[in-house]
Structure formats: structure tokens, C-alpha cells
Length: 401
Image (cartoon, rainbow, N blue to C red; front, side):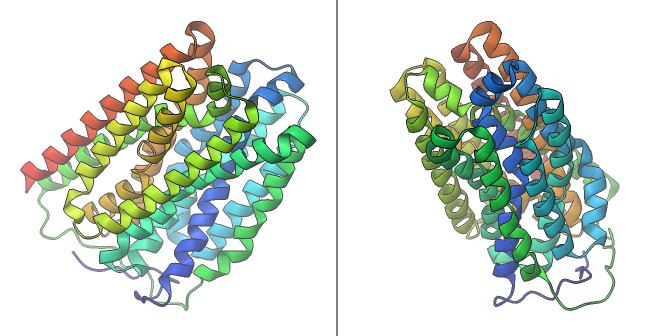
């Protein structure tokens, strides 16, 4: 398979790729923050806007649905526009979304603005795949993808701090305003991903790949996207309703907000550490991903017990391991389709955000009808199914040789 050189992305250089990766990771963090921040502030928003849990859950689901359904268009945009431009647009739109959300007067307006944020969020993963493939040496790709994947953990860190530090004294509108201002920082850092011009992109040739092999790869990508969707359904539900789950288990709001931030730090550390370690044996990535998904399912089962102790243990497992596979899955799909970098990011994103789109509304509706423990148990079952789908895809790939 021939090597591609993307426009505006230089040949790999150890001195140059990390600033661009950091800028992309920070952009990914703020691009996903509107959904996480509204989720963390949901109880107060619901009370102030006189909205039901299902109405706010639907607004958050549509944010993630816009990301999933906007992914095919975002994939084409990411392939054509300069990387700094894509990053800056994603960060600026996220900032605007949260600033406007701080002024909404009803759930309808909140839903509309979150849809816009979801569409801009779709830009990040495809351009991240392009950046990693073009600028990061192969023996550092899992680490780079882990850093970008850590954005999902960092995306819950700021909302946790807002719940603990800003919400009690100043309210949810001020908390969203602070989040919107913070989202401007990555926009200023986007030029770190700038690079001198290069030759036009060269589409890789598929010589040497038989039709059966290509069909197998397509099935594997489909199974891995399904695994991402199933695992994300449970984990995103916990991230979205973390504060409500914590208070239901007997913890105070401030304590729950601090625990959300602590869990997010665990998630960041696990993603980066897992990326660094699996770079030494990238062929084992799929096994590590399955283990993380199943461990996340265990965390969800512990949350379902409903006590404060099991909630703390389950939350740490669900966040650290249950969310820890995202960067590894991106790195693994990049190795599977090395000449189609936007396709790799698109596969991860459409699976991840399809599950995330299902989670808030479904979890909100089911928990209203059956309670939090039963709904968390359903999420744990979804995590087990995710591990099975990931394993099936890996076995298909191994049989194909």
C-alpha cells in the first residue's frame, strides 16, 4: 500500500507532531463539552426551565446524533480543508454554542443550539485520524490516539469542576458561560497544527488486496463501529447523568461534582498510559479494547447496586476502563486502513456518537420508568455485547490473514 502525503501536513518529525496532537486533543475536548456540560447541569436546568428529564435528555441525544449523522460530511471536509482551520472552527462553534445555551429560555432553544454543536463536533475525529497518519511515527500512534481519545475524559473534567465550584454559588447559566469562554483557548492554539504546503493528496492504491479481503475489512469495521456504539451507550449515559446517579446513591452534589472530575482524571491517565504501553505490541490492541469494555460493564453493574460505595467504585471503572478504549480503537482502525485515514476516524466517530446519541434520551426515559439501578444494569449488558462484537471483528480479521 502506498504512503500518502496530505496537503498541509509535513513528513513525520518527532519535533513537530506533538504540538499539533495536543491542539487537536484540546479541540476534541471543547467540541464535545456542550453535551457533557448540559448533562452535568441537567438537574438545575430541568428545574429552572420547567423541563422534564426526557426533554433535556432528548436535547443531549440530538447533540450526539448530529455528530454521528454529520460524520460522512465531516469526513470529506476534513480531507480538504487545512487542519488548523478545521480545529479553529470546531472550537469557536463549541464556544458559541455554550455561550448561547447559557441564555436559553426553554428546552426547544436548548435542543436547537445543541444540534449546531453536534455538527461541529463531527469535524474532530476525521481530522485527528488524518493528522496522526501523516505526522506521527507508527510506533507512537497509539499514544497519540490515546491523547486525543483522552478528550472524552477531559470533556467531563471541566463540567465536574463547574458543578463543584461554580454551580452552587452562581448557577447553571454562569457555569455554561465559563465553559464557553474556556472553549476559546483551543481556537487560539489551532495554528500549532499548521504545516508548510506539500503535494496534493495521493489516493492509495488497493493493489495486493483481494476483493474478499476488502469485504472482510468492511465487515470488521462495521462490527467495531457496533462495538463502539454499544459500549458508548452505557458509558455516555453514566457520564451524562453522573450527578443525578451520584445524588441518588446518597452523595451530595458538590461531592459528586468532585468525583466526576476525579473520574475524568482517571480516564485521561488510563487513555494515555494504555496508548503508550500498547505501542509496544499494537497487535494486541483489540484484546486490550475488549478487556476495557468488559471492565466498564463491571463498573456499570456496580453502579446499578445503588449504594454510595459501589457508585464510587463503579464510576471509576466505567470512566477509566469503560471509556479508555476510544483512542486505541482509532489507532487500530488506522492500522487496518492505512491509506484511508478519514475513514478510520469516521468509523470510530459514527459508532461512538451513535451510541452516545441513544444514551441520554433512552437512559432518561428508562430511568424515569424503572429507576436508575435497573437502567444502569441494562447499560452493563450493552457493554458485554460490545465486547462480543469487538471480539468477533478481531477473529474475522485473524482468519482473513
